[in-house]
Image 1 (cartoon, rainbow, N blue to C red):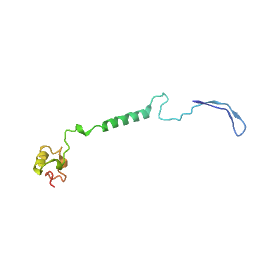
Image 2 (image 1 turned 90 degrees about the horizontal axis):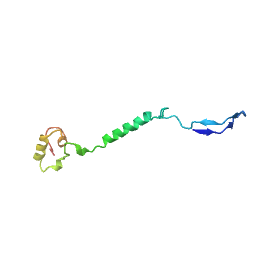
Image 3 (image 1 turned 30 degrees about the vertical axis):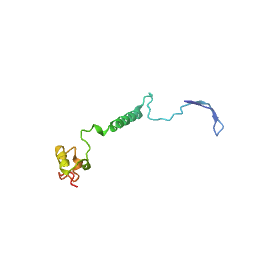
Image 4 (image 1 turned 120 degrees about the vertical axis):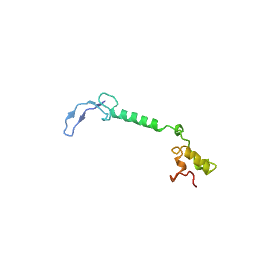
Length: 99
């Protein structure tokens, strides 16, 4: 809040000085509690904390075809767990590291 000084209108009448609220109405409620803005900030913090988890917690090891000495070795690893090593079979025909 601030004090507005008195002033004269164009028609010559004087307006007495008075207190005015200089703040604009925002997301805050009249009780002073954070309303929607507080919930938005809390939600963003929650989303960021969940998205920052590392991929090292994954039970599947990241393996490429170049990590294996032969196609047979890659095939046996792929056959052991097809969901973890699905990147070894690019064309989805069941044969790992064809190239």
